[in-house]
Figure 1 (cartoon, rainbow, N blue to C red):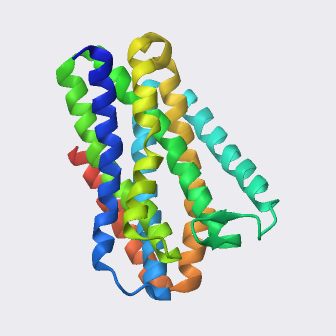
Figure 2: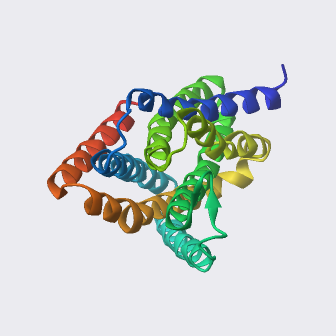
Length: 245
């Protein structure tokens, strides 16, 4: 097996791992307003925790570049919201949802898919440091992708999307990882300077998504104390999880 094929398969494994995040929802039958609110709270906490990790990693490669990337991430979401908001509600469709529900799900998928580009670059660049480093980074990103799948499913499942399709969309959101890993491996020196921009971009986009979409919806549908508690615990769990990795 040549090196390019190996890089692609390693990165593809990280993408497939994202689908595992849908599995806990096989045991969630009741999709009441309270469950929807807590699902949004879990998604918000996991995304915030992941964002802290992205910023921390990004600043290792370049502090100013990470900040610039974060600002660009916020501007990207603002632009995406403007585009989606300008669509006729009857024309905006995602799965079986239309209108506001479809807009929210599309925005989540766009944010998480864009976020995957930087992770793909990280996998490809890591192969420049040898197989041991590449294996460690790949396993870490694969495990890290599981709660990202939870976050995606937490938004899609309450809208009536099946667990199987939630798993499929979760994997789809991570497909940029194998697509970006190969060119990053082949042109490692060219891609390395772009890494802090990409990490910052993903963090900025996710934090903004949490603050303007997920948390407001969660507070509207559930008790504020419960939403705040679940969000906080999810943030702490995600941060500790990343520290463990």
